[in-house]
Length: 479
Ligand SMILES: [Zn+2]
Image (tube, rainbow, N blue to C red; front, side):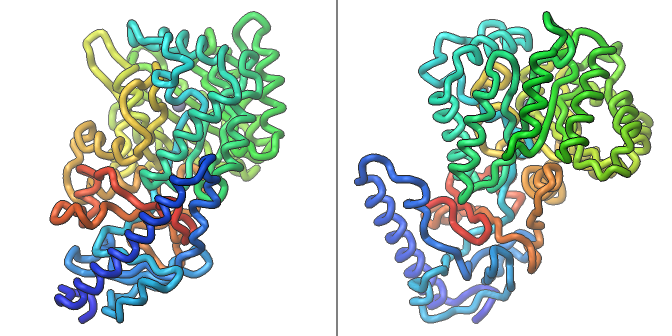
């Protein structure tokens, strides 16, 4: 019987098929681990494209139903009710037996710093411990670490971050690499190498990023502007970005936005700014000037690419009227927001001990703004806690935004999946998994989880669990 309540023979066939698949995966893992030196990824993951994924639960279908997907050219070609077949279909190349697990759209890092991850754990930087835990210290510790960055540690840490992310279900990320007079192009070059190394398993979109001022400091920012101009022309650099709030005064903050937006527009690249990172009512939000500058550049008429604004914690003090005004001022500019709650909760503190992070679900639903949430930093003085799992941020969102309903959970999932992909301008797969969508998925759990096997998006957002398989463009990217 197809679809509802598969009978005992279906379950048995499915279980046998699963055992076959898992044995094959284990044998493969054993072969891999016995090799020396460690294999290249292309050796491990050369299983070829998948044509079918059978017997899975899907996010927008009743949880008691099972489904078969066929894949063609890296896209979903059909979705049909699960049909019991002779179990040797599982032996055919290109067939993945889903064994009643939940198949959902893959995950995305809309914003993650590739070059300064794992500094609190990497043996090379163990002397750089957090003592006060504030923003000034985070900048100081990171500056010290950056002065010691070399290709080997950049590759080691960055590779770890991408690898762990893939295992959590990530298929695409916007990765920030800093460019300045100290690191010059070290971070960027390592990022370019990693982008190439992982090109079969994950899309790494690189953002050349000026974390330091573009107009303040001893040389008035001349050196960093020169390096950023060169970076913007480099092949493989997809996005340019900066941090206007690090400039010494408001005039220079606006100069920063004018300069970097020109750089993005002239090079046909998206723009990504860390903006309004404070919780002070007395400080005027810079976003109004930023929008004025961008509109003054005739951004839309000149077909400028996406504009992403990260942090923006100052906006949490907005009234409903301010939010409506913001929506109006944005108009047809391609502006979207990325909330970075794990960093914001640790870094942004008011005297009153209040915390603040962009209310992304409310901005989406109430004010019709575009937004996503993201991990930002892993294992450094800006964000010591947490890991590379985008769903850990979605899960935290349940508490932060008091978003516990099924609908809330779906929005939170989208914020680390389809909405995150839209923010960084890449095609996405909807929760409906429509025919024609990219075959980019994450398959949750393992069969031995038993009744705890997650069957809905709500369960996954509450507690995603550690076991996942990732599929990108119709190919498995994890074992
Ligand atoms: Zn950031």
